[in-house]
Image (cartoon, rainbow, N blue to C red; front, side, top):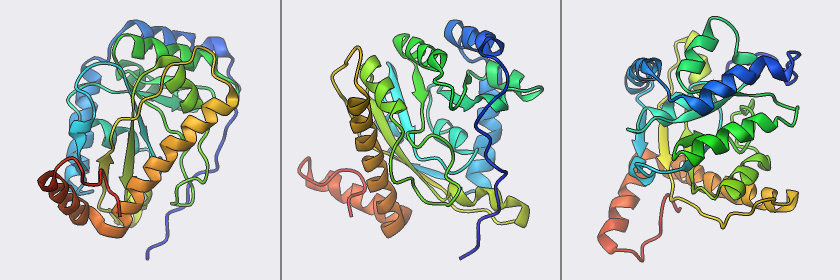
Length: 261
């Protein structure tokens, strides 16, 4: 098996003050993504469909309207685009604050992306995410936090996604992105085959002020479902999962859901 190309050293702290990012949050709360979003969708979709041979499974499980949180695993910078390019609706992304630098911050802000200052207990990120969800939007949040550097899923989720789910009351769709860990091997002219499988929406009753334990429990349950979907793709492959799903439709509602092994 080919080795993964090395990643840049991870930097968590952003030295810029909170006030620097207020304008990005303001725009994300007040304005919808514009033509820049559609342009990025077209470009990244062409790349995904051709070089990555990327295909979705069960994208129809994402509601066509109304508030929803999309929760994928995270291996690659391309994960944001891979998740959104198969959906008709516009999807809003959280991105680490270090990415908000010229010239890319123009693309991010016009594309509906908003920053998160990692390691800083960034309350503004949650305010922005809940504002978008309150307007019936779709928000992507990685329950593992940052990208995996090993090509394997994390053992435990970060509690932040549990907080957002419980405080907003929005359904969350777990998503397994398989193959994207090798996208960074493109400099070696290695292009993986990527599959994006959308799972059944999960729901919890809203809690205004959830405890840390409640947040963690929800986050762990979401990650467990992502792991289940991902394991199915690893074991059976894209064709095997599609075959299982077709068999499930034929046998009716009693059939096992998703990518059960």
